[in-house]
Amino acid sequence: MDYQKPIPLKNQDNHPYWDAADRHELLIQKCESCGHYSHPPGPACSKCGSAELSWENLGSEVNGTIYSFIISYRPFLPGFQDDLPLVIAVVELDKAPQVKLIANVLNCNPQDVSIGMNVKMTWQDITEDRALPQWIPA
Image 1 (tube, one colour):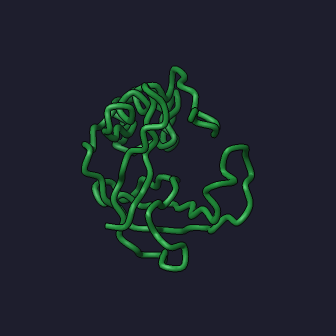
Image 2: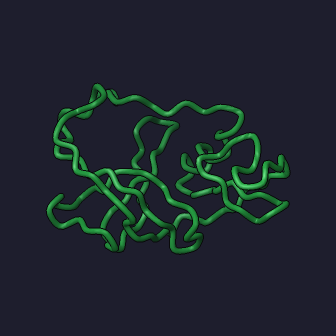
């Protein structure tokens, strides 16, 4: 069966992030001028405005802590109707605490999710050439 949900598009600012995700690795944009991580990635640092940006590879073993979350009981986009209820979490990365990533928490009863819960990243292969970073309980 074909993947029915929207697929994130690659652009000139985010393609290193998505290329790494497709390899099951996490790359985060980092400013060479002030050291600030920028996520989501963009053409300039979100803190100081510098265009001197690089990418830091945080690897494929990525852990974090749930900073905030919601449980969605209705599909806001096509394709999500079979995933309800859906836990959408903001996760603070262990290796870069100032970075917070939004993704779904999978393989977990929504009532068991809590702020401060330890999670680890997993990659969901959605097409032959695209993988989405998601979270599972650690």
